[in-house]
Image (cartoon, rainbow, N blue to C red; front, side, top):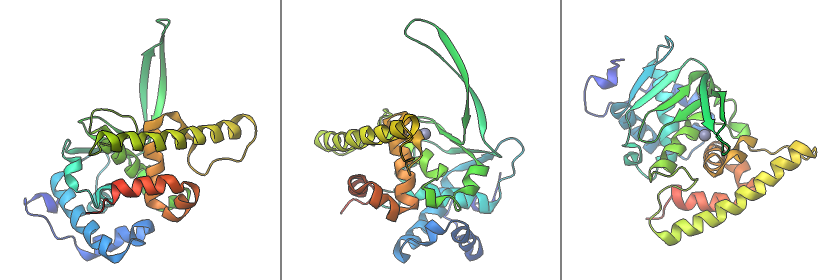
Amino acid sequence: MLSWWRRRRAVPALPDALWHGVLDDYSFLADRPASELERLRALSAQFLRDKEFHGAGGLQITDAMALAIAAQAVLPVLHLGLAWYDDFVGIVVHPGQVVARRSSVDDAGVLHDWDEVLAGEAMDQGPVMLSWEDVREAGARAGEGYNVVIHEFVHKLDMRDGLSDGCPPLPSHAAREAWMTVMQSEYDAFREKVVLADRFSGEPTWLDPYAAEGPDEFFAVACEAYFVNPARFAQEFPRLRELFGSFFRPTP
Ligand SMILES: [Zn+2]
């Protein structure tokens, strides 16, 4: 799609109406402090200049849709910079969720295949795929800490060091050790709660139980909630809030 912002390489000025429309649809963005919103708007414009959106399955991507995705994708790197996303250009948007055929061979050499339904997918060094239906719901579902765009873009941050392990690249080995220690204990505690809820009719977890699939998913799902419902996240995960704050909002 050759849209108005791709006709030139300079960073486009976002029309006010378009920007305010996105803030109306995604109130968790509008709730950020004014200084952050200014930066969010500027980085969103840069993001639109640098990335290419592709509609799949006949989906026409409007300027408003692209900006909605850009603004949510930028939120995690607001204080880190867009260079964290420089390993890819493409963002593929499907009208709804996508069924992917998966297969793997187990330890006994038996081939298993199954269908996985995806709201999004991030590939190492590759594009990000999103379901527009899920992107659109993100404004209404911020209360439950749900956000597919943040989820997939946090996977991109996680994978930048080549490992999808719930730990983004950090400045030192010691920082990585410290990160892993907190994440592992929070992940184990969360898994325990999911098991209690599943098998022993315990209280359902606030965070999506999908986070118990692995440390990488735990990081991505927790970050969704950290960014779209910071108040509830701080109550539920005070240690993670501090850990994520040290990464996403580094002190200069
Ligand atoms: Zn994921």
